[in-house]
Length: 312
Ligand code: XIL
Image 1 (cartoon, rainbow, N blue to C red):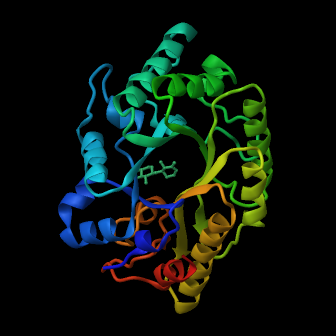
Image 2: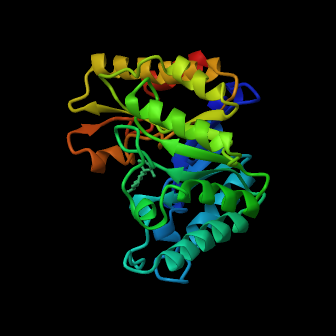
Image 3: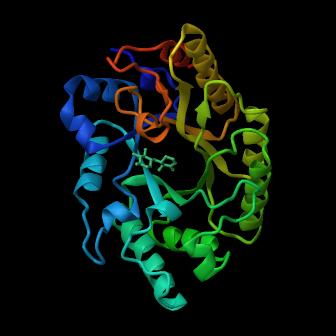
């Protein structure tokens, strides 16, 4: 049948976060996924902690399988994510010297990007590197390597796959926030000194009762720096219980984000962080919230799904 992917303009990919085990578990789920989406992001499989649970002990299987699934179904693979403070493997010891830590990070970036060279169209090179004030977040990478780790990560990734599009990904920066201003300054500085940053990803984990301020204008100022933009992890969580009014507010937010992306010519992809209320990460991460996706727990389309169809 027709799905979102067939309605989208040629220059825009429509994606969802995905896990191999969800595809294996339910053929109906798999059908909806392949009908509607022409891009996928590994929800967890490509995070360092999962790829290399013990030092040098790689588990490539779930990630390789997702890449193969994408290739078999005409879905571009968005790589997520190389440098993220919450996905640091537990075997890395911050007391190790700077050179050791730097070598480990470089080796990680080079190994992962190299393995999927030509198969992953874009990478979230760094994820969530800012604090809420728009300064650099205090992480092991900043503490050990200093602010230059960001530029280094981009350069290493670029060397490992010169054709991959390299993104910086962040949350709470969809609208005009202080953090978005910080992100803007950071991207401008990186570009000014020739760091290969090609795009900015806006996670967009939204709540039903808050609309980001001037999303279109915000995305546009980044595009004006000469980079692509992408909606990378959209969901709209609802405080339970769900009501028709909240579903309508949710529908408006999905529409708001897609409109902004369609309005900015360099918006290359629009990705939801899962499409089923049955399996969304929101259910376990935000205790009193749920129903964040465009299909309900029985895999029936919600008003938000119809809004995406209409808007495309
Ligand atoms: C989340 C996954 O959805 C969960 O399954 C996992 O337990 C934790 O990570 N920002 C990101 C994503 O960049 O990687 C996160 O994904 C959600 C927030």
